[in-house]
Image (cartoon, rainbow, N blue to C red; front, side, top):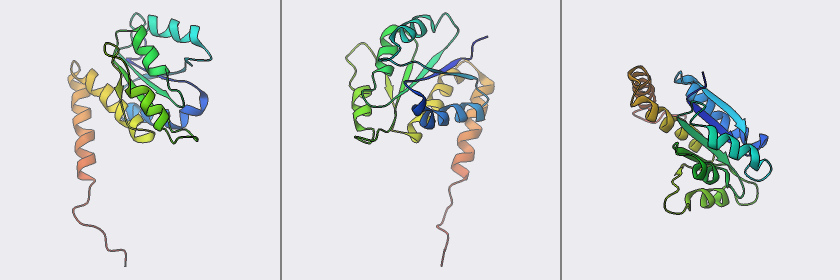
Length: 162
């Protein structure tokens, strides 16, 4: 059986960011598959993946991309599955270029756009898990426990480092 969540990225270098999505899903007990699917260098692979993603059993796609960042939008234009876009920080413009590219989709081609970098990858995983949790009570409980642990990890007072 195919994992319910696909994590796709434009290149190997995007893995440094996107691994945080995979790690978060693993911590929640949610299976995912990762693939390099470049909108520019492997467009046939992108078309094949996105057109067949639903039939393959995926429920949500998390797409990370840097630079021109066309991958999330192109994937969303080729599938009816929810697509969450993660802007990967670039050297040139620090991910702002990626953010703008992902967030400025035309009406009718939605991409849920997250923060640039690690925080966006983690939040994309949490959103994807929340979508799946709507029909999976056990995952809903694991997600609630994860959020509770996160809340409890916040100190009430700052530590005195003096």
